[in-house]
Image 1: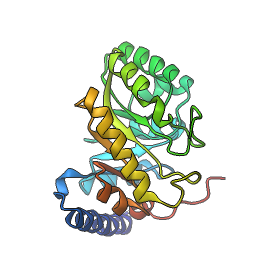
Image 2: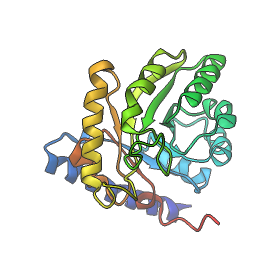
Image 3: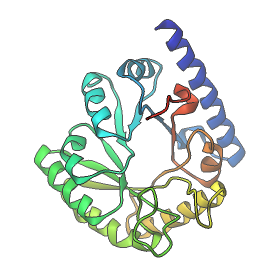
Image 4: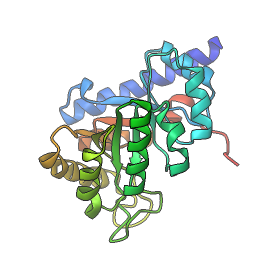
Amino acid sequence: MTDRKDELAANLAKVERRIAAACAAAGRKREEVTLIVVTKTYPASDVRLLSGLGVRHVAENRDQDAAPKAAECSDLPLSWHFVGQLQTNKVRSVVGYADVVQSVDRSRLVTALSKEAERAGRELGCLLQVALDAGERERGERGGVAPAGIEELADLVARAPGLRLDGLMTVAPLTGEYAGRQRAAFERLMDLSTDLRRAHPAANMVSAGMSADLEEAVAAGATHVRVGTAVLGVRAGLG
């Protein structure tokens, strides 16, 4: 376990240097960017080690893995982010541990989240997942609402009891005009964030960038980066 802690500490230090350098290059303060460590497929023991190393935000994308892990780590001072495509039959479980759902992309999901947040007596942060590969279609290949649908969905979240509209999230698209153009994709997300904040000034969170492209996200203005592999190592095949 000591070897694993040392490995995680070294990886965290490398990621921290990358974020700090990206902030300096962009003329931003380091504290403007929050690191979220994506712990999917890794055990609760790693989450515990990360917490001991100062990590405060972790993310998961599968409820069946996240729920028991969050329960096992419930004594730790962590904020849990759900970042995967979320089916409505998993909402009750996710609301039980998640502080923020970053993958809100349709009205039916908003209704379900609101119902369960109220039932649990919680306020749940919500990011709208924006599909920059969606074109005129309703959702992207990996989930997400098309840019044209942001305003309507944001208003729905803002009105929903138990929910808090925190901002926007995207995953760099694999197809469409932004494929292979991460910086341009993240700059587009920032433009959409500016539009959103005209109607919802507090919705200022912008989650973008992962291990391979966090520098581009920071340069574009992201407030949160989601880093998994660069901290925890290359994941084993998911079958």
